[in-house]
Amino acid sequence: MSVVDLKRTKIAKILQANELDQEIIVKGWVRTKRGNKSVNFIALNDGSTIHNLQIVADPEVISDDILKKINTGASISVKGKVVASQGQGQRVEIIAQTIEILGTADPEKFPLQPKKHTLEFLREIAHLRARTSTFSAVFRIRHAMSFAVHQFFHQKGFFNIHAPIITGSDAEGAGEMFRVTVLDPINPPKNDKGEVDYKKDFFGKETNLTVSGQLEAELAALALSEVYTFGPTFRAENSNTSRHLAEFWMIEPEMAFYALEDNMDLAEELLQYLVNYALTNCGDDLEFLNQRGLEEDKNKKQEERNELSLVERLRFVTENKFIRINYTEAIEILKNSAYNKKKKFNYPIEAWGTDLQSEHERYLVEKHFKKPVILTDYPKEIKAFYMRQNEDGKTVRAMDILFPGIGEIVGGSQREERHDKLVQRMAEMKIDEEELWWYLETRKYGTVPHSGFGLGFERLMLFVTGMGNIRDVIPFPRTPDNAAF
Ligand code: ATP
Ligand code: MN
Image 1 (cartoon, rainbow, N blue to C red):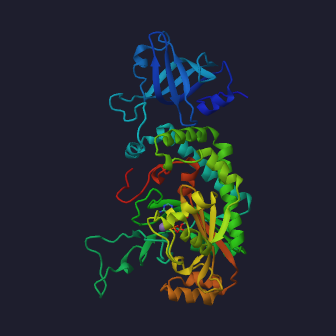
Image 2: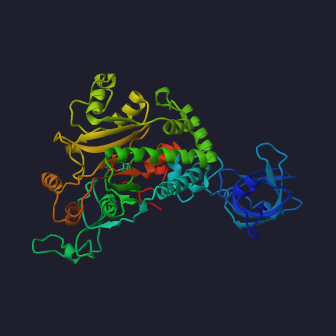
Image 3: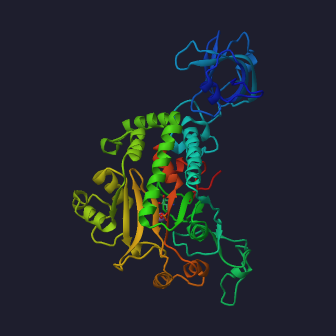
């Protein structure tokens, strides 16, 4: 098979095929140019792989006028021949026959100089940061993970459901919402009571951006048996952490006839599948990020360093069964831990019933069990209204999956399928029955036990790439005070 396309061959293909003496056209962005009077070496990248392709440009073949425009950041098209490389670091290189400048980049002004930039600086130039090795690796892995999610569910016979992004219910219960309105903000229509009259708004009622596709996925599961959503969700929570975004993507499977154990089995299988997929299919990018992680660790204080490298952490998840314990057992472990007694937690664990902070979750995973942990049966007060109530009257069939370096990566539960129990819990939590009449009807007509969970896609990406901040695993992050690009 020839690697030659009529038009252009991508660098990944050229390096993979490793075929000599082919004439090819390659296009991309210049990473660096070095050389002397007799020869120039151009490192070209087109985003198809982490690796650059070396272009050898002889000043006797390529005019000086062209050569001086080949600066870092410029885009070029090269026609040339694939040859075995004389130098170290690459097997093949291209001897350029002609080079066309597609777009110049002023070396004085181009912000991405060939040196190390901080991630904070790169966030400010998010329109260009995908041209760095780090971010192109992250975004290629993001694609691979998205593809693998669909592949996993498709192979299992699940159906992908597109849940609405604009929702008319504010009872989803997962956090603060962003309002969607076309009303004039200066002079909105008012009702008799002097309140904004949303009856006059676009949808004739108050609407928001969804915080979760779960409720709609449940409706679909109670017809198609096994479904999942994979869409954007929005939370106007002002938590400016390295693990929260205002706009993030979530994978939400929902399965009829699944008890909590089946739900946990599926979540564990999914996570292991995805991590394994990355290890098998994103080798070059992971190797780069692994190296990057090791370098970063060198600059950290001893106690902040990772005990395992990125690739080791990934293997660790694919090779170990997750620990499963209930909330009550977890609280005992945390309460009696030396950490708690020495007051090392910002939020000390005093009594049963408190919500766990990510420091507690990470303690269980990283210090105590040293394995991913699934925590079940949380107090009903700290969980949503739709979770199935246990016989004890105090806890619900919730399950959160906790990962090293991250804390919660999955939140799920067996759903309350009993109409009377659900109505009673909604009343206790002051959730309007009328508003969720459609949700309640599924419990009236042919209700069945069912379960589901939400996997935060960017939390998964944090784990798989080893990046430390969730702003660096999504192309254009939305966080408090930031919606640039
Ligand atoms: P946390 O306690 O970390 O805020 P949560 O309990 O609000 O999470 P859920 O409502 O259970 O989370 O959402 C399901 C999953 O979505 C979480 O396990 C997490 O992976 C992800 N997630 C939740 N909030 C965010 C956010 N603001 N940004 C990115 N991912 C999120
Ligand atoms: Mn939250």
